[in-house]
Image (cartoon, rainbow, N blue to C red; front, side, top):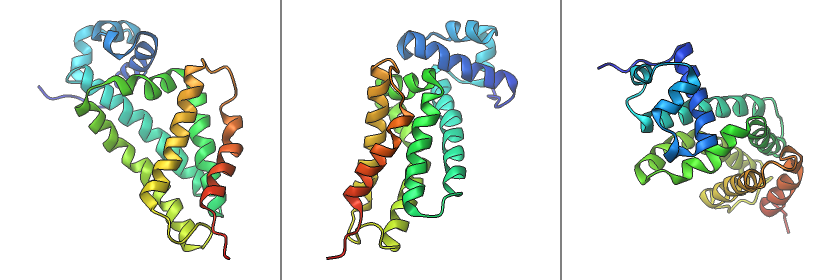
Length: 198
């Protein structure tokens, strides 16, 4: 059977999956619950997705793809490398704070999947990590950042900080303004990698 892609029903199923997984958890989110939320028959989901795992990966590809494209577009409007990093941090926090259900799925539920699924999720994340790499390389080239930085470690430090800050916000039931933390996080990260000629 050929699996179809895209279209209004595809989008509706993706959005329904985000909502159901956020409410019930990935393991308790049966296809029947997702179908009910989307207002389609159970069988309709299998016209678009092979199984629940395929739906989860597709969900992440769609949502993260939009997340990355939006962030990249905003970064391109910034001139300095410091502003580019600040914009990436702001967009990371802003986009997840505007969609609490998606934040729950990305920060909590995706972590509970099996190793094979996590590997596929990691593949999707690579485009986002490349954005970070580009900013770091540019900062080193312009002598804004230290010349001997280990790009991989710096990328892990930045992404890990954003990821853990967002996860903490989710675990605290979104009780504070995540986006308001962007400047403080930016200052901490910049001060750790800024080049200071002796």
